[in-house]
Length: 165
Image (cartoon, rainbow, N blue to C red; front, side, top):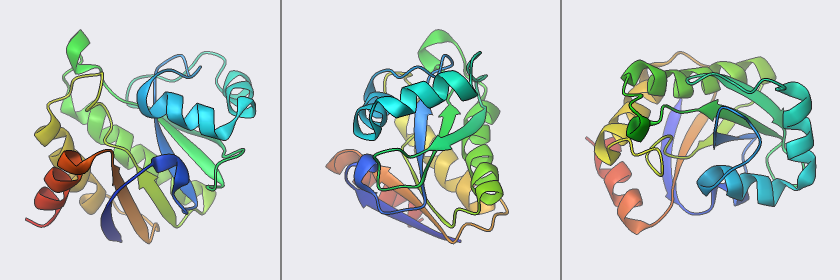
């Protein structure tokens, strides 16, 4: 699998699936979650209500269709909230490996990831990047490209530096 890093808007990525950093309720929110829901349109929220009436557990992954997004699917993952005391790194790793497993089930070959839990959930940014890069590189998958989409130049540079180590 090829691991690529780009700076940009995850909602505009031309990939088979985009990963949404969702909350447990699966009803939309802020940050990446809010941007994906806004770009996908109201059908995404409706599908989340139908497919995930009880939400998802931290570290879990599930999918919906992409609705108005260029991507065919949205793979929703619930990252750990570091600020609230959820500091088990295996839960963050599970977001990445679980998303790849869902992509394999769907037949998605290209997938775009945000930096899960590194925003409002407060996971230390450098460790969030290392977790993403290490997990994506070590997880067996049929995905041909995993793209990490950085929001902003400083995030891009950090991800690029760690990915190049």
